Image 1 (cartoon, helix red, strand yellow):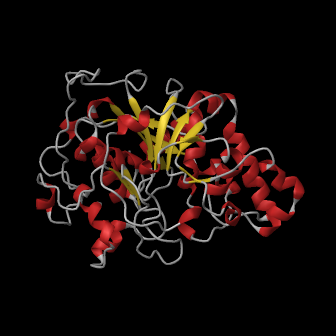
Image 2 (tube, one colour):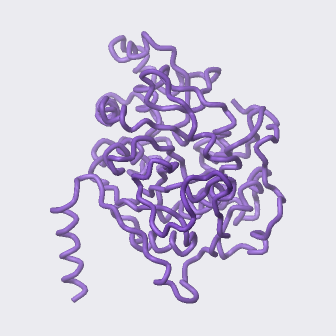
Image 3 (cartoon, rainbow, N blue to C red):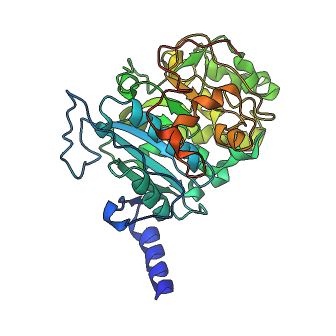
Length: 376
């Protein structure tokens, strides 16, 4: 019987659903009586403050509700602990947490069944507005080239390229967040970013970084390829935090523009860093600049050693452990970097001391706190 159901489900996925994803409705809380067996404790209940437009009495919120803040994140077994902490941080600091809608993208062949991941999210965040989508890895697998770190070759890293097709068509704007970060400010502030003119994405830019190092000598020596930047003043930006206009994205077929550069990479080897360079090739020099406080990135060190790093100078609204080192792994090893303690209060993993979840501010960076030193 189980086999027959599996076969029927597979047929349903391949025949009746779109080529990029399927969506899974979140599982009602009544499915969980007693201990769910999941490795995360239940998060505190976060409710809307005064002036929020979504009523807390609603039992179901449609993703098409225009009052929502939409956040897209990947959800997989390897970075699950980071994703849960990221969601918790968003809710904890949001003025209207019930107005936040999460779109979780899971890999088709993740070791954790996507339905189990959906149940786990519901068990951890009983009142969360969310939807889970399955990303068809064969969409991108033949476009991926080798990178400096194997983790960067994961097809799910490229899911952000396909959000225009994956998410419901009524979703015309989304914040994309990586799974190795925490938000320590109100996400509604980031949501209010205006994308001027023809700009499709907004992100913190780092124009003092050496932009040329993100592409090979072969790229810069080729006048046909390098002239893509001839009419732009390109700056580096990190794709782990982006505000995206999905209407302009779909109209401009930016998915295909990124794929075109990935095809060039397969033939000519013009970069070394996974999913970032195609975004730079398409958007660098035409990005809506967002304050650096919204992506204090690089806290995971470089892609080879993962050494400890400190913050950029200036205030902090989001801490991002991009790079090899992840805070949960370093905490578990007993050798955390100083800033890893700022991630710890959002960790809901049962294996850690749950007393940390009580109301206390130990280790939590506030939005107004200044950074210490630059690492760029």
